[in-house]
Amino acid sequence: MTKICLIHTPVSELKDDRLDPPMGLLYIATELKNTGWDVEICDLSGFKTDDYCIPPADYYGYSTYTANYNETLRIKEMIRYRYPKTVTIAGGPHASALPNEVIKDFDYVVVGEGESAMQEILEDKHEVGSIVKSDPTINLDKVPFVDYSLVDMGSYHRFIQGERALPILSSRGCPYRCAFCSSYNGYRKRSPQHFVWEIHNILDNYEDMRFRIKDDLFVKSIDWLQEFVDIVPQIKYDCLVRAGYNPRVPELLKTSGCTLASLGIESGSNIVLKSMNKGATAKMNHQAINGLRDAGIQTLAWMIVGFPGETWDTVKETVDFLNKSAPDIVTVYPLIPYPGTDVWNNPEKYGMRIIDKDFSHYFYIKGNYEAGYVYETDTLNPSIIQEMRQYMIDNIRNSDIR
Image (cartoon, rainbow, N blue to C red; front, side, top):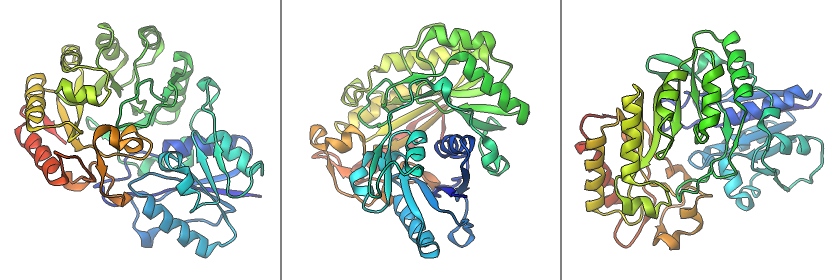
């Protein structure tokens, strides 16, 4: 019987790269398993090279990310040396962003969501050397629940507020087009009933598990959230929300079990936020943090320093914003122009020059707060951006810096 092995590449620079199971591969593997294929996930995160245990297979699928793409290529060559007749397939964010480059390294490249494309490749519907573009799944209620038994759930280390957390998705894509992000792929949401049905299914197998809702945007419709609140069992979860939400959102989140909400604040400067095409203002972000706090929900603010147009004045403005808004947790990282984002596709539009295309440097946080600095403008360079980031970290008060 044809054997498929899906490979998840480690990120050795991180303090802990085995926090969550690989959701993209889990969705693909679940679909293949349900349609009769012999599929296995080989999650190499957390392992050193000498400890890799990779089974023989006819097809190897690789989920590619920019920061560890070089390591993915090394693993692919190692496997091909052992099993020279195998077929290699690349998918994931990096392959979707740079398919014409990645196809030079693999037999097939999948652009977009991988479930149907993988089926087509396994059924020989595409020639070797093909870039297979997959249309996004519109009705997510038809997507099977993730089969978490395909990985060793006990081997993952994600804890939130001291409790083990399991990732889950209620939507795909994002309706916004921030300049630094490539998540836009048409926003689609599962029905509340389907999502809650999966939550019940998980709780039947994993008791006392809290949830990490990994949507790029959890709350878009107040009606959807109200229906979710009405039927969800007693759970605890964290999620990502956005400024400008309906005033009822914080209380509904709290009622349904949310204890931590992350927000992509990015900057306290309206000038920088406008350059990012963020679609939010500093006032809106301040109100969002305050509303969640008033409802008893902890807040985590994600911040970007060094976006083109950043100055020392905008950095100080951001520090003032954070000290006034006082989110519980703050993460500060430099802009990384990931392939597929507008800042990568159109750097001249932002006055940027990408000066380092070694993808192993494209990480925004690794051990001990290190990060990559890979571009410059006429007024910013890696040294200045690093100084700005350190200034922010040193001057933010009343928040836990992570």
